[in-house]
Length: 600
Image 1 (tube, rainbow, N blue to C red):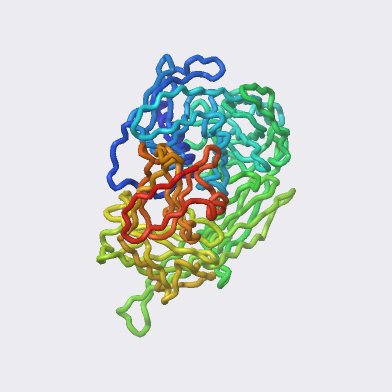
Image 2 (cartoon, rainbow, N blue to C red):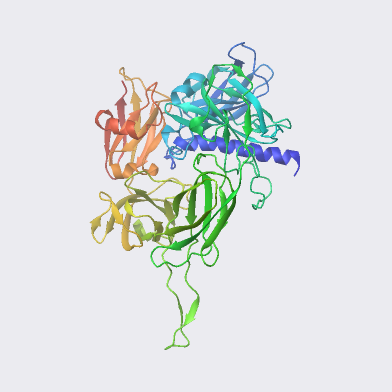
């Protein structure tokens, strides 16, 4: 592959990381103005190093809006460090510089499997302290001096037990955040990503680190040589397929790693790591359906070390069960692992001919799809054999969608669900409706809320409808969750949509009645069942007149304006606290009005 193409792939992945950061706390379904206009604001100025006032030359500069992110807000500095970005929409932005050694907003993305997609994914307080924040009203020119702050650097060497350098090992950085230790990235530039690999001497150097306590880990690459690969892998610079990692201090657990205290601009050397030898073992077992004991052929079983976080982890090593449901892992070192078994979808059975009607062909009934299951396994000095994994049957819920005027062929409808115990996963907890019908498969036992998003002529248009009612045999499912049990099939759910969405221009003003432009705010349903879905809430920024246009289902809403030091958007606890103190608005079907709210 040509070098230029390789670099482009790497750059695409870097930009993908920006989208992770923005999507972590951005509403999944934006609420655009009915008559959007091209923004006229210009952001221009000069970028200088904070410690020397020298210009930051020839560096790419991005404006990253952590609420309702927009792409392509980018430019580059000239030889004097000057830049200009045109047509910037109203919003509050952070400056992201792609320059080695500079502290990046990406460093404050507290990535783990529990908070990705949530407001808590960013350390907003630290982000504001070390990165330049720029409010834009969408109309006026903003002149700004961006002060680029140099972060600290950690360097060292990774070797094998025989003293040979560990070439191309993957380096991972973890930062202490309260009681947690979360993996971080130091930036998105190609140079920054490449620094996460050791060189031909086994050495590494990672710069651009904000102050704090850090932990460093090293892991080998390509530890599963028989694994299938498809060409260039843009993740290879920062991810490893190894089942073990060694932390600074030469321990195998993050909890035993030695901390490295980093101050602003400091340089810490000789953070060396030795990769130990290990004796490989095997893990063997079977995977079956719990309901009838049948072996599950073609099930995928994956393995990962419990010490390795989900966030930014490579797809774990994987095997497939045979016709008897048997599977086996080889080359597994000592450690504690998580195995996850997931059976393939069991489609309709083969065609068979009935005895009484030779000409009629019938299809065997579809078996319920089983649910994935995780089990913990400890390997300590010997093989593990005879591990049995039983998968329970998943539930299914199906029903119909009623759109005003019978426009089922013209509407794009997505049915979403969320368990009572947590919010919906916008990436997975949804299914499209086809011809006015929907089916949700592979539901785990529990209580779920349902909703639907619908618009016309494609998914990218403004949402036109809202959910008026959801019922099952006359029972209201909008206020009360639906209880599903293992293997249960629930039919006849009816979702009725309406088109008379409420609209409001929400204007924020100060105590003197002066409009507040470029003010971040969130409009959140009071109803807890609707708060489970990101598509039912809106976050954004007021325009030059202090106005934020909102469109949504009729009902009661909280309007929360961002304070100077508030984490943003508001997380679960902040919303719960706002229930008694925040401003409330009530919108009726078909409303189209202006509401003025005083922010103190």
